[in-house]
Image 1: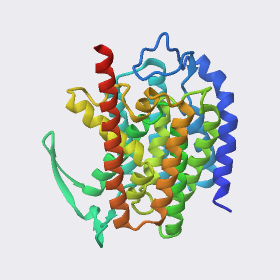
Image 2 (image 1 turned 60 degrees about the horizontal axis):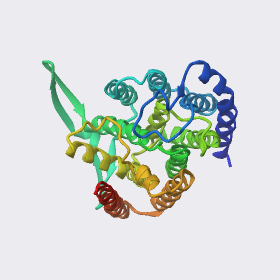
Image 3 (image 1 turned 120 degrees about the vertical axis):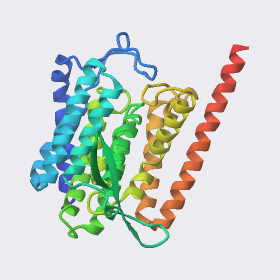
Image 4 (image 1 turned 90 degrees about the horizontal axis):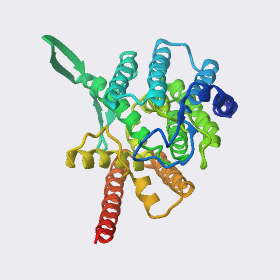
Length: 356
């Protein structure tokens, strides 16, 4: 029952903060007006506040003050999150360059990893453990000879990937907070197995349930028709989620599985844009949720589809062995990738027929 306290308090605080913050967010001009903001993936027809990352992150911070230890790692994590939130709010207001946002994500990830939140090992699905912190990579940069542990490199890449991947997964109302909540609960339940084993274990448990509670509190106002959008400021929450997935022992396979559909969609998006000779940073309207919309499926049903799949995969992640998780991830890659290719082919054929 104790693990429910952070969840419930985060839920209540965020649910109260979100409607109260709407007044401030509107005064700040954090409003997405479809007549002024031209975006290829835009779905809404009327001006809607898009600074939802503010109450979402603040709800997590306030709850964390009561439940998380004030260690240097925890403080660094929230400093990095605050920087990410600030950059996100600026982007929500002015639509800054995606390259500048990406640099900010790298800086935030480096702050987190420098504080000791890293991936010291991964479980070999075929037996044994691979200790990444024992593998040192020599790097020459601007005349400097550096030695960086592979564990730090993997952690930075993982954090950046989760931050960007989840940003692509907020295309329909309610989609993102539901995915984040389910992912956080799954990671939190898995972390309970390691609770007490090291200094990060309890942080992983409590912060996971705090993120889940805050996300559901925000979901009340983000479900279709949304009263507020997460905006890019919600990247701060994705940063926290990526961190808890590697706290108290690497749980990357679990995180990959529970976030499997947006993960595979993100990977497919990058490959598709690169093969088309386009930058992977620039938006389009070809994500899986956009394809489902083009077939007449409503936003609520698409959000529910993502939640149900995430819940099923999260449940599997809790009971499967490391080897079974690997095969599940491979199967997920094949199924989601095949589905995306199939849907793209149908739409292309339909477009070609319409042109004729």
